[in-house]
Length: 337
Ligand SMILES: [Zn+2]
Image 1 (spheres, rainbow, N blue to C red):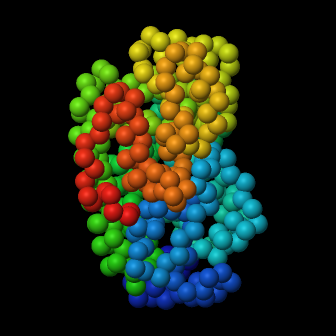
Image 2 (image 1 turned 90 degrees about the vertical axis):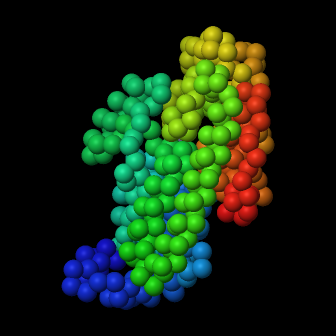
C-alpha cells in the first residue's frame, strides 16, 4: 500500500489511490472488502471505531481490554491480522518498541499511522535515570525518553484523533468525507470532556490536587489539570518492576509528608503492593471497580468501556479522593461514544 501511494500520488490523486487500496485488500486473504485497520492500544481502537462509523472499514485491536501495554508477544493470529491489514495505527513515542520487528515478521506492506505526531513528549515525573537508560537502549529512536502515556490528556487525544483521521482519509478516498465528519463530531466531544474535567477539578485548590498511583501513567493528565504527582508504586513508567524495600519506604514517607489522601491502583495491574503501601501510610486505596483506567480501557460492560467513559470514571475517582464531586456530565458525553 505504501508503495502504491508513493508511486501514484504525484501523478494521479485520490481516485487511483482508492483503487490501490481496493487492490491491496482483494489480494490479501483476510476480510476482503473495505479498509482493514489494525490498532495497537485499546484507546486507539476506540478512536478508530469512532472515526470509521458508517464506513466499510474493519478495526481490530492487538491489545485486549485490561492488558498491559508495556510488553507484547505477537501470536500467529496477530501476525495474520497484521499481514492482511491496510493500515496499522500505533501510539508512537516508543510505547511499541516491538512494532518494527512485528511488522517485518508479518510481512506487512501497508501504511503505518503514528498517532503521536505533533505531541510534545514529557519526561517521567520521578525517574530520570531510567529514562536515560531507555534512551541508550533505543538509540535509533531519539524520542525514546518521553513518557508514552500521551492519551491521558484529552487535548493530546484530540491530536491523536486528528492524526488517525488524516491517515485514514488519505488511505480511503471513498470514506474520507464520512471520516472527516466523524472526526469533527468526536473531537467536539473530547473538547467537552476537557472542559468538564477543568470545571470539576477547578473546585479544588491547586495545592490540594495530589495524586499517587500504581505507575507513572498520568503525567499528561496531571500536567493539563495542574495536579501534583507524589509518586508511584512501580519505580518507573513501565509496569513490570516491583519496588525495592527502600523504594516502598520512600513512597510511604512521601505519601505521609505530602498529605496525599489516597493511592490509586490501575485496572490492568495487580493491586497487592499498592494496597500494602496504602495501609502502611495510613491512606485510602482505590482498587477493584474504583481503580483507574490508564494503560487500557476496560471490558464493554465496565465504566472503562470507552476512552470518554474511562476518563470520566478516572476524574470522578480522583475528585472523590479529594473529598469533592465532579460537575454535571454534559449530555454529549453520556451518550454511547
Ligand atoms: Zn503504562
